[in-house]
Image 1: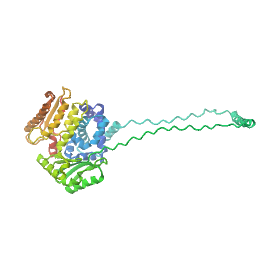
Image 2: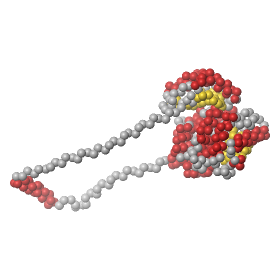
Image 3: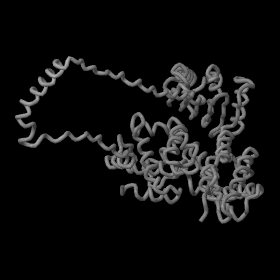
Image 4: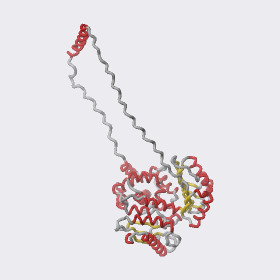
Length: 459
């Protein structure tokens, strides 16, 4: 379809999608329109994930910035992403960054005047239907009825007289001969009983961890999202959030999945979230873990984690949210399949978070593990591969100083990778300062997104 030709061609080339680029765009559009509440329901997913500022930067934009991997997962959900990867036969290192590029552009195209439409244009729906429509099943063909007898056909009339005469003659012969004809009745052959194949064993459903994400935006305004095993757990969480922050101040959605395990933190949730009243704080409750981070100073994060130790005791794992994101990225790097390329590697790396101290360029110690693992896969790439390490800042402070700081941070990451054995010729470092924001610098959330290290494949 002409309206999407440029976008499809662009992502097919940039991410190596080939003829899978069109179906990927159609799948995204279908997800956006089939959500409860239509497009408004889809946009509410950004708000529930605490990404309202990011969404605002996309609406009406002709050249929006791409979404990082962790934001893509927060909006679409892990299960849907895994289903899309399965349908397209592609890995997360390709699909996630491709979605990060596609979604902002689709939102910008849908909202050229800055307003959210109630539905997609008919031409867009036509593209979805024509791209995803399964081939029509061949209709079942009925067996042709035998042709009627030709006119004037049928039995000759003289046979109608001959048949009863033959029957009578046969009966007379039987009586005169005095012999009784014995007709042998053949017993039916025993039915052959086919052995019944045993029914396949029912595989137990895969258990999923309960999850609750909470974002505190200030003035008791809270957004949340999550998955729990039953309606009682869902109701308990929402009532607890309303009790702590106010019934009119909490917004979000919690899904019920019978395959989810019990939320062991549920009875301690109230005591935990009473420590969350710090603007910009984000927290993630897992099976037996709680991660805290977001747009708050390290000293506040550490204070909250210390308070949670008193709430949950030693049976729970407590960590900084940034470390949690890097742990996931570490697992993804180790899970790269044979034959991976540079795009797969940077797709995973762009999901990591390097939380430099304010005004500093030293790589934090907890980021070295993921960089070490990244180096191990970079060394398996073709030797002529070039990966650019881009340093970015928000717009706070002097522009020239930000440019120098972003360059120093990019060079610091490059130095760690070289220490781990990556050839210097494969790595370049460039500081961009605040010239390439991903989101608005008017909000704390936007500034947090703009302070980043971003990897790209060089030319």
